Length: 405
Image (cartoon, rainbow, N blue to C red; front, top):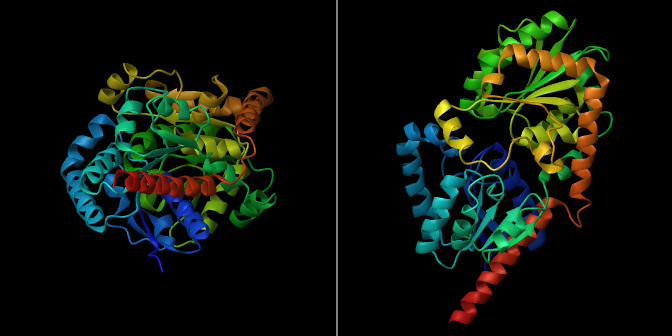
C-alpha cells in the first residue's frame, strides 16, 4: 500500500488562508483522503486540520519599507520553515501569497529537497509591474496557478507550466442564498429602508493603522449628511482589537461582524451577506473589492502606503489602477482614492454621490457584470481546478525524476 501524499502549504495572509483551506478540502476529495498536510496557515487552514508551524501573521507584512523592522522575525521564521520542510521532504510545496517570503522559501527548498514539486498559487502581478519577475519565478517553481485568464502567457513565455484555475470568489458567492442579506439585516435590527454603509478597512494591522483616520473622518461627515446611517464592518480576527478601537467613537450605529469563534464557512457566508446587505461600500484596495463586486454592491476604494513605498511604486508600475474590477474591464469604473486623496472629505463626498446618483451606481453594476462574465462558467470550481493542478505538478515532477535516473 502506497504512502499518502504529503503536501506542504504555506499561506501568508487571510485570503491565502482561505485558498489553502479550499485546496486542502479538494485534495482530500481527489485523492480519496490519501493525503496529509503541513505548513503555515491561519484560521481556515487550521479548521481543515493544519497544525501551523508558526502564526501566519508573522509573515503577513507588505510594502518595501514596512518589512524592514520585521526582518529579524521574518528571517527566523524562514529558517524554521526551511528546516521543517526540507527535513520532511514533502511531495509538493504550495506557496500562497506573501510572495517575497514564499519565493525565498521555495528557492531554498529547491536546493535542499529537489524532489519536491514547487507550486505557486496566485501568480505575482507581473502584468502590473516588474515583468522580469516572471523569468525569476520560472527558475524556481515547477508550476504556477493563476486566478485570471490573461496571466498564464507571461509565465509560459519562460517555459513555466501555468494553469488558469479561476478566482475563488466565483465559487464562494454561489453559496450565498437570495434571502441572506435580508436575514443579516434582521439579525442586526436594521430596517429594510435604513441606509447601510459597508466598511472593509483591510485585514492587516498596517492597513488599519493607516486607514482608520481617513475612514473615521469620512464616516463622521457622512453621518451628518445621510439620516439614520448605519455601518457594518466585517472584522478579521487578527485585527479585531484595532478595529474596535478605531470605531468606538463613531457617531453612527456600527455593527462589527466578528469572525472569531465562528465556523469558517459560516463566517464567510455572513461576510458575503453583509456585502450584499449594504447600499454602498468603502473598502481597502485588494481582494475584498472583487468580493464586494461579486455581490453587486457599488463601492469606493481607498488606500494609503508610506511615502517611501509610494515613491518606489510610482516608478515601477505599468498600470494606472489598482482595483481588480478596473483591471479586468480595462477602465476606471470603480473610483479610487489613494494617498492624499484618501481623506475624510473626499471619501465622504464620493460616498454621498454614489448613494444619491443612480447613474453612478449603474456604471459600476455594468462593470461588475462584464468582469464576472469574463471569468466564464468554469468546467470545474476554482478550488478543484487548483487541486488538479497541484496533483499534475507532482505527477510531472515524478516523471522527470524517473527519466533522470
